[in-house]
Amino acid sequence: MFKFNFYTKIVSIVIVLLIPVLILYVYSNQTTTSVLREELNQSNYNQLTFFQNQVNTNIEMISSWPHLLIHDPDVASFQAIFLKDKVLNLDGINLVKRIQTKLGLQESSSNWRTGLSIYSPSLGRIVSENGAGLYDQKKLNQLIKDGWQVSKKRSYGKDQFIFSLYTLSPFSSLGNPETANTIIKVEFDSSNIQDMLDRFKGDGRKEPFYYKKGVGVIYNRTANEELSGKLISKLEKMGLHEVDNLTVKIGEESYLVHAVLSQTTGWYLIDYMPLSDMMSPIYSSNRLFYITVVGSLLVGLIGAYLLHSQVQVPILQLVRAFRRLKDGDYAVRLSLRGSHEFSFLSSQFNLMVEQIQELFEKVYVEQLHVKEARLKQLQSQINPHFFYNCFSFITSMAKLRNHEAVVAMAHNLSRYYRYTTRQERDLVPLSEEVEFIQYYLNIQQMRMPRLTFLIHVSSQASSMLVPPLVVQPLVENAVLHGIEPQAEDGVIHILTERVGSYMHLIVDDNGLGLSREAITALTSTLDKPVEEDHGYGLWNVHQRMRLHFGEDAGLEFSLSPLGGLRAVLKWSISAEGEHANGLIEPSPNSNIVKTEGPDGSDITSRR
Image (tube, rainbow, N blue to C red; front, side, top):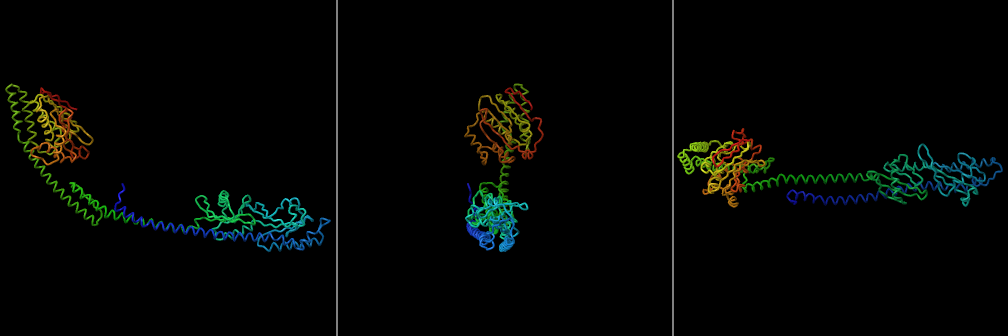
């Protein structure tokens, strides 16, 4: 579940402050862009329309020349001449020269490069500024059509278009040109339009060209023909109208395209320019604004993070530390960061907890030492009942002249009391503890022939160090409280077992045992302060194991598979623990498996 903490609150405030600014800017930017696009479209439309009108004006002016020439007296005289011979007379020659002069004057009246030609069907001759000659009437009839005609020719590796207009007198002879009195042809090539396109291109941002589907394209002389060709392919798929303002995407670039149809020629005047060129100031402004917003957001996030890390986090750490301290965890420490006030507060907290922990540990260790001293005092005293039973056994065996039993009892009894009364070491090998247990069980077995025991200790366990006299109380409880009160044969099984990173020493018996409730109650007393009526033996073993091996070590009790009680002594055998324990080489008694029967015979083997 998302937690709305101090940091998220600060970040949320920063974001809430930036959102209205961002929304207002986006709205303003969209409005500005829309207005700019409309203005650009209108401006480009006006420029294209003006340019188209200029071209149309020139073409219409050229179109009017034949009508003027038809009413010229010399032209009228030329169409009335009928020759008997194919050679012109002097008057005819002079008339042709006057007509040529007038054609030259008419052509020079425009800044376009044009050509005027007069055909006389009656004479079968053509007159132009450059000369006069005969023509083929059949070929001419095929060329004559109503309106401007466009033909294409290849010049210097590029396409060039020739625009031609035929005017007949009388006009009714258009369908039958051979009956016409006079035919006037006016023509110009597309280079005139290219000159105007070059001037219109002007600032270099525009790329104007003329286009007519099925006829061709008239480019300006510096046009990118490959890009224009791709644009034409897109426009053909989209379809063109008399006036169009389109946005066409070619590759990764978008282009603003304007098109105006010429009613005079039927050609489209098309102009395009990259949208990025027009929108680049807006894009730059947008980029600068977004960078500013991101920078402001980052500054806000950094400020929120600093408040969170420098103020909230130290306070939360201090609160958690006090809670752990309240729960009795005196190992809690605060990490020191920087040199601000919270760092000083953390160092003082650590110093206070350290002093409290040292005080508690000192008191705890002193109490434990008192308990150990009392235990050693008890251990150093001979149990009168146990001692009386042992000597009673020796007396009985001596009267029966069973010297071997007397020697065995004396031997085991001397070894038993030597081990209990000479313990100055804090840690001993487990193999020595096991050997000591064997002496104790041998003594008990001599007294109770119905007792059988089995000891199985691995080589790894036997070489480990444990506090002295931690196993004997477990075995003694099994004998005195589990087996001795019942009449059946008794079995005690002592073994070691590795469980994960822990070593378990297990003492099983088939004695009377305890109920689950009694086991739970017994386990709970191990971690409580010792009470006089519960004794010190098991509590002392549990506390000493935890003192040496940590909080996870100690005693556990459960029901035994043999039917009685199971006591488990466990401690960690991790790499660090093994190094701290100082593992030693296995003693000669390591890996012991020893069984003794009711008759006192020993069955011992090693692995």
